Length: 566
Picture 1 (cartoon, rainbow, N blue to C red):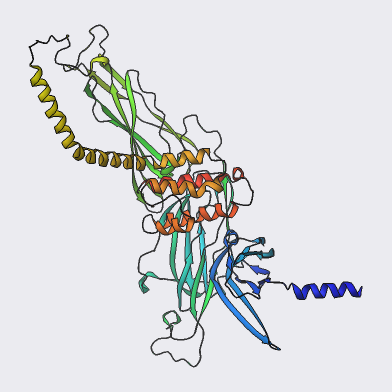
Picture 2 (picture 1 turned 45 degrees about the vertical axis):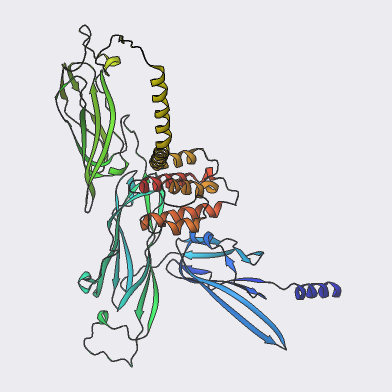
């Protein structure tokens, strides 16, 4: 027994524990933060930590903060390094902080798993001097039905917002209704409200319209806001007025964290869908028109379908139309006109290019358009009126008098269709040889000039073709890839390289994000980073990306939105 204790003591002295994982608290509520610290002993270099796995469950308030410590005890030197974050939870329940890789030089260490119990936030605006409120227009909706989310900040003391983390809405298509980014907040921006006999100043921070893409139950991530407030200091004398909201920040201040309440949205499926349903949910009206109702045979005419109303305009497909025979039909442009107010409303126009191949009278039938009426909570159909099209013979084209059809094989006509007869003349052999030599010499002399232009033209056309096909090429790679987590970065790199937005396809996620900072919109850059972080997290875990059903949809949606303007 004594030998065993001696061995264990000797082993612990020879191989001391190098890494400690410390959290300030394991029992917290949704609006409380904790300090997460990794401490390494007997090292002299700063550690590198992959913190991405934690970001699925927590938001970073501050950090990483690096600290170092040196001790001399009985002539012996010891040192340690620490790296810490202040984090706040995104959801309630039992949350496990997974093992994290800590790299020190060539060595890699793993932290211990830590379980944090997160309870519901206690919301009591009557006793709080400041709080963050979330308002949801409807918590029980259908797939595609609009939900308005509004965030409002209330305060009774002098305060200013330092940083705000807006939530991401997985499973929803989002349309901003109000975003104060870039606008200046003045005292007139605030409203005076009274809640349970307490006077507050309030300001709307953000408002968004969400359209659920799938059925199920969805927990909305909270909005997290870091606010600077004034600590009371009895030694400080106010100079002008006693309204604490307009107090000065020359006194001592402290940071506070505000978190919006947890909200759950239940999304119900659309049952009994009509056969011709193309995704419209809301309240709509439809009409149709022709660019001309009287045309000549073979002359193109444009047919317009106009859908006007409130709802998920960005998620509606083309209506199904049974056009008359002898009309060649080509899908044309899709245009949208927005009118964003409390509801996302506007006008959606589909174009169809029609070419009549036979003269006569045609009737484009009434177009039936079904949608789910969110006011009546039932299916509804709207229809266009039939439109008559009169097609006359064209005197500029050749016709078969019997069938009244265009000779499609002779639409490109020659001045003379008979076999030409050429007059033959005697030629001087010497004259032909001299002319040939001169022609060859001239071609050789001018060939460098033309070759440069031709080469430049070919390169320009190839670049243009690569840009235009960037989206389709990337989506094709996405559709055939076996592991999205592994190939996610290469799919994005291929897209942006084809768009001439990055210099090389061989870039890592950090370089890619850095090169795109000034080239794509900040909201798209944020979503790109989120997707890359998600894929990197699971890249080496062995978890099949087939179980991650929504990551492909996120990539498709993001690339499509970016492709619209780059």
